[in-house]
Structures are given as C-alpha cells and as structure tokens.
Length: 268
Ligand code: ATR
Image (cartoon, rainbow, N blue to C red; front, side, top):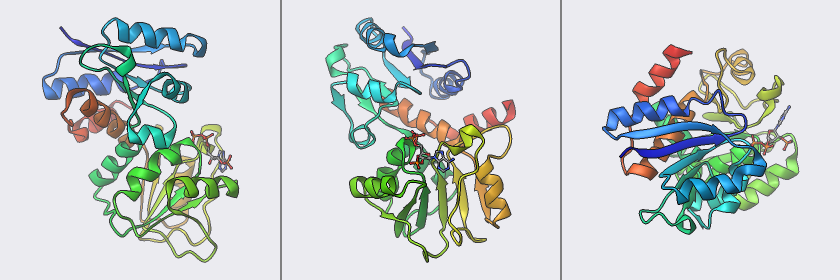
C-alpha cells in the first residue's frame, strides 16, 4: 500500500511539494500518495487528528500552520523546539497520534543546499538578514557547521538581540568586515520591498543567498548584484532541501536534490 502523505497550508494551490516528493519517491523506489490539502486554521486540529488516526504516514506543514502544528504535536525534535514551529510531522510505526513527532527541516534544508552549492561553512563569516521565524529555524543548523561567526542584522534590533540570546550568534555591529555568506531571511520580498543590507557587508567574495525564490531574481539578489556580490542564489534549492530532509525523516533515506531541483528550474 502506498504511504499516505500531504502538504497542508492555506493557501496551498501553488505548492511544489507534491511534485518534489513524487520525484523523490520515484528516485528511491518508494510508493507514495502525496496530496496538497487546503486546511483553514479553524479546521487544523480536527484535520491532524483525523489524518493520523486514519493511518497517514506524514505531513509537511506550511503557512500559516507551522506554529499551531507545533502546539498540536506532543513530541518535538530538537530543531522544532528551537524554531517553535514544525514543517514536518512524522507518524510513529504503531499509528498512535500521541506519538507523532514534529520536526523542522527548514534549517537543515538550507545547509544541505549551501553544501550543494559548494559553500564551506566551517570558519565562514555569515550574516543573517532578519530575525523572525525563518531566521530562527536556520540558526541552529548553521551554527552546528562551525562558522567563524553568524551575525544577525534586523530592522528591529531588539529582535536580533532576542534571537542571538536564544539561538547563539551575535548582533551585527557597524564596522563588521564583509561576509563570506549573506542569507536573506526576511519577509520583505513578499511585499516587494527591498531589504536594507548593512554597508560593507558585501564584497566580490560574498555569496548572497535569499531564502525567497521566484521566476525572476529577488529584490535582494538584484540589490546584491548591484553591490558587487560575487554570487547570488535564490531559495528554490532550500525548498527542495527541506523536502529531502523531510523525506529522510519519513523513510530513512536522503534523496538526491540536484535532479529534482533541475526539473523544477526547467518547469518554471
Ligand atoms: P518569517 O517567519 O517569514 O521570518 P516573521 O517572523 O514575521 O516572518 O519575520 C519577518 C522578518 O522579516 C523580520 O525579521 C522582519 O523584521 P522586523 O523584526 O523588524 O519586523 C523582517 N522584515 C519584514 N519586512 C521587512 C522590510 N520591509 N525590511 C526589512 N525587514 C523586514
């Protein structure tokens, strides 16, 4: 029988997750039935109870349900605990919904994608733009790679302070030299606004990686090119990376992201 999986969100119609997981299943020879399901916030708890009590194997969770899913699960993987949010739910072998594990693979997916790009994180100087949920999810997995520093720059400095106190790293200070890697983790691009990058942060040796993606280079990527960044990348690879990490949590095998990413690029 195929493993029953889904991504839930509201809205959900544009999700690429079904295509990504179908490709992973094919690659790994695992038979799965992966749907996308729109779930309104008020219906979330009933949906989760029903999905797992009827034998669902796992879920991906996207906006706006990541925090509520965290509240619903009773068992949290460490990355979910740090983020306070879950993007992946994993059913236990015995089918009891009390034992569903909530994880967060966004940060691991980012690191996986950076490695695909050949980024050496050990001893790297990293600047995180943003101090919200996306930045929070990335801090632990990034710091685990042993960078020289992760500085956090945020429009509201008190949130940068709070994030570094909880998750490690340090707040950006004027006079910081250029960084090896700058990561865009704000929601500024969603409203078409350009995010402010501190002056001096970007040099010709800097890779600027935006967690956002789209058919065109994002506002941050364009600003980074104008500022002389050596390389810019969007977050489509992170999307595939977080999916690969979720697949690994469900089936114990980490699929190869590269061909699936290439397939998505061709389709967009
Ligand atoms: P997410 O889960 O996407 O991280 P969030 O928790 O609401 O969402 O955080 C949004 C992040 O984007 C914050 O760091 C926010 O900065 P503030 O803490 O100052 O609000 C940042 N952000 C949103 N719009 C921005 C803009 N126009 N310029 C700079 N930063 C922006």
